[in-house]
Image (cartoon, rainbow, N blue to C red; front, side, top):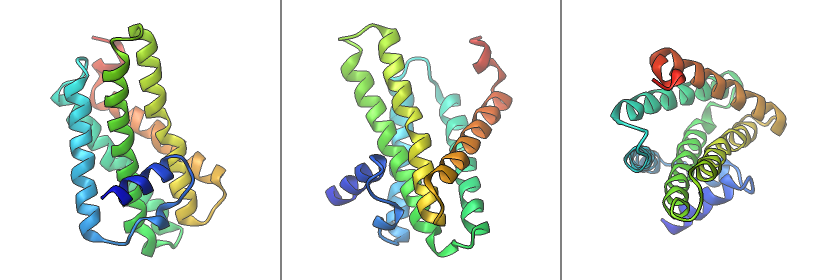
Length: 171
């Protein structure tokens, strides 16, 4: 398990690709559970979030994953799909847990606005990480993967705003 977490850290730091993840349906199932638990931990540790945010965030994540899966299949790299989705979910879970830890550790030390900036930057790091994973999966330049990841991220933001219009107004 420690080896898996180290591999996910290496992918988050853009040092390894999804090919470093073993091809394993059982590992994928474990990572899905970890991703769901990490999302729950984010919701539970963030006063501004509730169960509705968790459900919408999870739905948005699944739709984003489907977008990435479509890109991988259209690119003709279907055999890499399991490793790529495992890496995407595993890195997402890891970044969520880093968010929770940073939020808990920094809140007593820094102003709320500074903490919010730091944890938001942690979550935004997921875009280049996802771009890296996709580019390595479909054998394209990193910028192509980054553009795909930015498009998926924007689509997820729009989707979130459509599902929960009150979230954008602060109401």
